[in-house]
Image 1: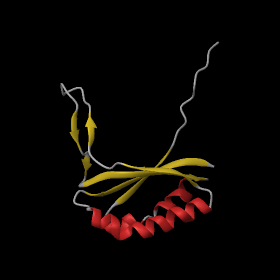
Image 2: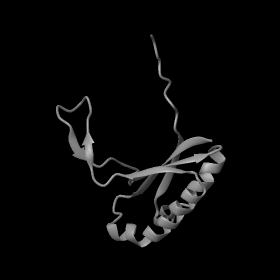
Image 3: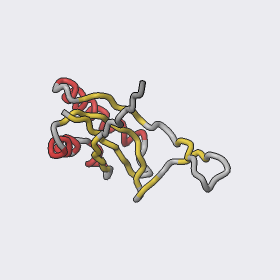
Image 4: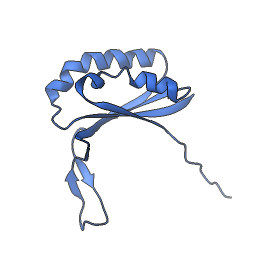
Length: 115
């Protein structure tokens, strides 16, 4: 089994009420994934972060938006391959709210150990 990250994006105008309307669906889905032993962990991006770039003299607090969507959370799941994890991503309630889910395999960085 490999680990994959589901990156959850929602429309810029997505509200706490929108999130609340699908909270029970998310809870049911993540409980199912936990029972199946494929849920690793998840985390939310509760607010704008500090964006650091070479072209700025200081870091600026902002929400990064792409194609009218912003990242709000990430979920790490175990799956045998992309086909399986993409099927799981298709279960996410956010898809019915004009959001999307990016799926990416988590690549383990090799550690060079020298003695």
